[in-house]
Image (cartoon, rainbow, N blue to C red):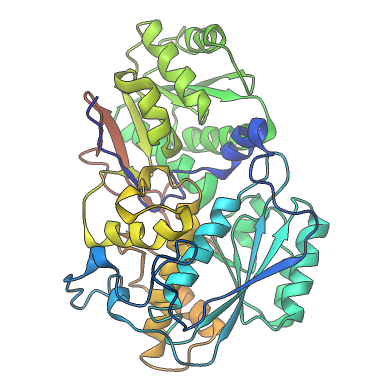
Length: 455
């Protein structure tokens, strides 16, 4: 099979956390972090690593894959031309949840640390080296509170949230420490004293509903979902968005782990009323099961799902059984300076050569990578007119009207929705699987804005 991998666009959409919390429940012990919530510290120094050091990567010179690339005036591609930062170190906190069954996301932290390592040789945050203080939360309010108190005690200027289920906003606010997160998880995050570069379930599912109506002409939607808290949260956001648009919907729920016969039963039941579009909220192995079940029953109803079902691991298993599947938050991969820079940054993290980095399989790590690199762009802009501080970066993000999410393809509009004041991103692409192995952007769905369609 000829396969061209896809990249996760700005990927909050591609990776709906509430769905993933459920999807990870069967594999929650893998990659578990050490017990407790003690912090680990990573400092991006200005010393070049030794050549051949795959742990840190040889960052003493601009990446070989981007040599000769002229970034021109593009602030999102300037990093290969920047040298090591020489200013005063900025102490930045990072909270991420790991080591708990169904709540284990080390790839987010690893990608963020990899971005910090890269910036340690390429400009830092506006010319300031980044000293990253990492604290591992354990999926409980107590552990998140302990991390907040620990990081505030270390004098951080800025706190980054990887995936933190119960952020202790009160502690950060009392200390005057700004908070910027990858994406919101619980409803309270939408109005928290924080900014989230991507929108989570509320925006993703609004995009799914809007695409179902505007692109597929759907007046009825069949939803297939696991019956657990994570998937139920995603399903609730989706049905609210469908209700807002006046689209009829029916939901069929299955188990976290279904057999082939079980998935066939779910597909048979949800299509009994002949809906115009199906939405699958299954992930990973569930993507494979659903794709095969649809083909085995000769169902040709189009399916919309999250970008996790477009991963290399899934498509290598199902091949052209994925025809008719459409992915929110995914666009065609192009060989560009930006995509090569992603590969260069992630290669040391993954322990492979840059051309071996499969961007379609970065998973949740893509979210962390894009956030850190976006903040580096904003910090560079702050440096042009004033002092670079954590608060200055946050204020620039909150008030600017011409920002994009790195690598510079999706608009940022913090506070554009009065009902979701902490959210900064409302636009998503959609891609489809094409017979023969290609996943490509759908014409007309290159940038679906949900700003006026949020429930």
